[in-house]
Length: 120
Image (cartoon, rainbow, N blue to C red; front, side, top):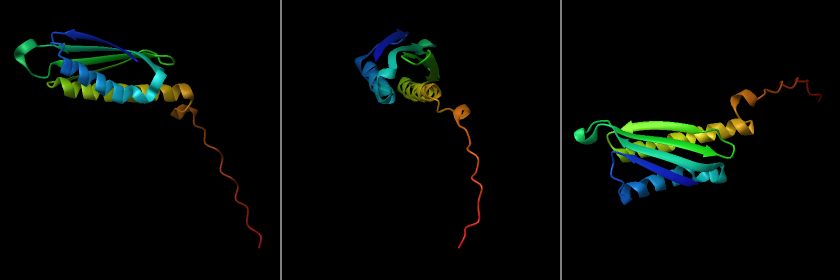
């Protein structure tokens, strides 16, 4: 998985970078080679004013995946990273289930077997 990070209005500290890499590795590691590239955009929308203004946007592209994207915001950047990582992992799992034919639309109900009385 290749990770590309864009920092808008935030200082790219090693601690934040490590947190982002660790969370994405944990959330997306189970997909192995399915996830090829991850783009992360972390932004502080209001600057030093504070409030719910830390934005995390994740975009993922893979072998059998269309481009998937999630966005989350919070006053705490680490919390926004955590939620966005979880959400992109669920989106990837849903997309892969559809390509494997495990979506709801692919399930067929088998007819019930006719019950025949047992002979004794």
